[in-house]
Image (tube, rainbow over all chains, first blue to last red; front, side):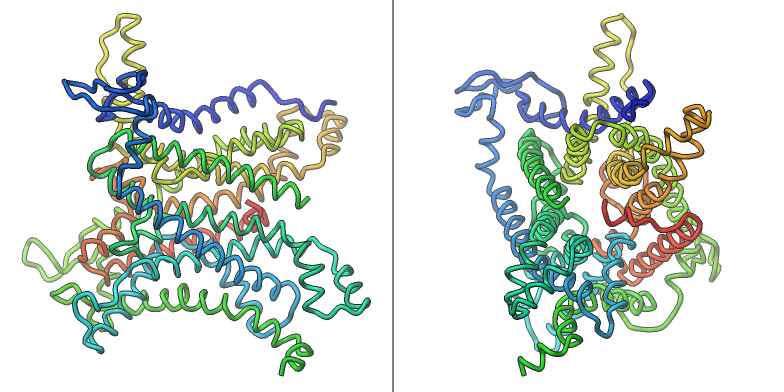
Length: 293
Length: 307
């Protein structure tokens, strides 16, 4: 009996579901090369370099040819600053949550201490409650604490404490920690403690054992945890939406704001770049995970 | 000091877990308690919170209103109860549709040659990790009256010479349903795949040897053994659908108000944070109750972590 035999029904259904998954993404990419500036309909691909005839009599200079909207994107200061914010937040929160989450995974897997089951339980909470509930909670916390501090210290004008980069970063660290911990914990569960014991028997102290034995073995888990944290931060809309302030607009927040007003093929160019970045990250993630097994 | 630390396993563990506990307590548990306290309060004229104790916000959600048209002091206004019910039924319908779409695909991947399995999984992960907002935008472009779907159908109708009136698809409940199914489909595919992949091939051979036809084998062997994946996937889909507000905001317009939109508006337009807090906690309670009874009935799969 052939274990890989699948009925025609399954095959047809699979093709249809993959089509459902990819048709919107392909549409998004095609419209990034749209020669119509309003993006309501597809005006054909941009084919020439130099002066470009938009609808009506508008002539636009397009030194980038078919990639007109991609070049246009780099001229957009809001997009550039949102990109910078998004990457800054993702980088800081990834590094911090990876370190903290790995420490927690080691603690939960290798040590006994008070509050152990409480700690493990608290890590599951962000998974079983809707994201908006956590976002609202953090918003309530910061707004109440800030208004209390502002009024008790008489802070006014620019001196007032408001939402901004720090609140977003701290919140991103908070929702990333559980995911890093669970990934590293899964890695630690599958690995043999006797290597560490052997190192200790041979006279290595705990610190040397950790850096020379334990860490190299859990490194693939730590890296895939880090990549997961990076993508979660990059992708986050809900928590950021409730903790952001002036000057800390991220790309998802910026795109959401745009969609409620006007849309140009610029958004599609941005989405196309985004899809390419995602493809790269997912590819790397799969490489790390296949190394694990 | 350091030496004592090294000998004391318990304090080492405590040291390692402390930063995590600081974040989990400070940004998860304390905020939830604060939300609870505020939900009993009242809104002041300038949009701030007055700390009192009353259940008025909860009464308002279930439909007991003090803001009545006919001059009565108390009346029934089902507006918010309707929103809760709409969110619940939408989450239910989306989850069922997602299971129906995800299962065949997960089955296909699990039964594909190991060499190609990673490629098929890769093709599921790319839409999953493409930004949520961007994917909603893609559907706005498809569903618009002058959008891609209407253009393609119109062009096909033109070929065969049929008069075509464009469909009004955007800003309808159907658009919200399609958007939710699209956004959360990968969350169901992955856990179902994980549990299907674990099933030993010999079980299928045994079923076939004992004379079971493929349908019977599926119903008696494959389906029961893949239930942990379906349960995990249901949790991963149902909970976020209940709380999401972007999909209904961008694809439903003013037509489809869900509990997520209700909560967001109370905070965004500084209408009434105390009422928003109460709604947020009701949402949490609803998802926890549904998850609890569902997992009690079907068991809690470890697939939720591996996804």
